[in-house]
Amino acid sequence: MFRTLRSKLIAVYLGIIIFGFGGLTIWAAVQMANAAYIDYGQGLHAQALQLSNQLVEPLDDSPEEIPAILATSAETINGQIALFDRAANLVLTTDGKSAELVQTDSYTYQPNSDGARTAYAAESILYEGKSLGTVQIGAPATFPQAIARQRIGTLVTGFVVISGAGLAVTLWLVSTMTAPLTSLRETALEMANGNLSERVARVGRDEIGEVSAAFNEMAERVEAMVKEQRAFASNASHELRTPITTIQLRTEALQDSLDDPELTATYVNEIDGEIKRMGRLVDDLLLLSRLDAKRLMAGTEEIDAVRVLRIMQRDYAAQADAKQITLHVHLPEREMPPLQAHLNHVRVVFGNVIGNAIKYTPAGGNVSVSLQPLAGGIRLQVVDDGVGISADDLPNIGKRFYRAEKAHSRTTLGTGLGLALVRSILALYNGELQIESAGVDQGTTVTIVWPPRE
Image (cartoon, rainbow, N blue to C red; front, side, top):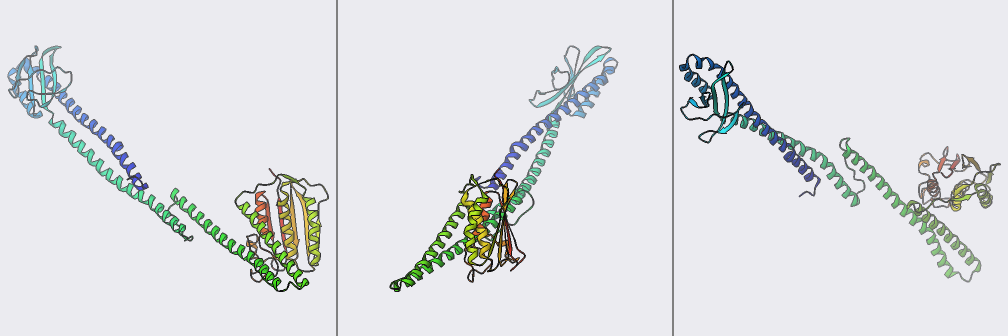
């Protein structure tokens, strides 16, 4: 019964109405009924006091006027008026019925001789401080009862009207609250079925509107992530398929040329190169997956960045010479503070940015590498005068498998994972990667800021 939010909210409202407003209505009804009886009793007592003062003179001079005075007052209150002597003995009543003196200083409600609830008010008749008797007024309680019923009826009517209006407003509010949630649920189910482009309409600026906006933002990220994963899988399969195809073709050719040692050696070298290429690709994919899963911890080794760069300089100098590229390496003259990192992470970052500069610089070009200390960390800058990057491609550089060249018309070997690895490793150490280029054939500047460990 209370499985939905709508039913729970309505139940809460009804509970507040019944136990809160309803209880308040009952309490107010009792108070209003009591007030009606009090007002009537006090009014009756005031009449008894007025009548006692009116009877002082007739009791002393003209007793024959007393019955008329009492009858007139009895007709006014539609009740009984009794006169008692100073010994509390009944002298007369306006209706001829017997009556007993009710001892009260104000008023009281008691059953009369017929058992009907009656309001009584008695007042002594005083003359010069001496009691001449007592006058008592008895009136049926039907008048205060009618007033109490009228007041209670008005209160109940107000309760019903206000409760109904409140219930209507509550149903509207509940509908405005649950409708976006229902839409949110349906959108989530659509996304679960694969329709990742679905979005929920934002309604209002309240908390539900903020939840809708947050859901849409999450949906956009999920859609982008899924697209990236699909592209990642497609590109990874393509990158793996190429060397596998090459190896398969070479192994088939080897079966037909085993008697040619020179051709066999060529095919074996090509197979070895493709296997190494696959190995590097798998290593890069594994490293990226560990970075994505946050299963790779930042290293705490004391790394001499200058020494690492000198060792790598010898390796990349051979590549630069092979392409007739001049490699300039500028190292700081003063000693630099060591980096707290993993050696392999430093080598991956340095190696990818320097290797890319050599790879995309044509023969006769220049690559300049400079290392500088920076507030306890380092700044590595690699500048080349190579092919450059267009303004359209520049925002996408560093995304996985993205290359400025068309995937199926490449002139430069590579997988497009290098700068993605650099960006992910630097993020692990809170570092920065900046890539700048004035355009195609205008060269590229890559700047790496590796901060000190906190």
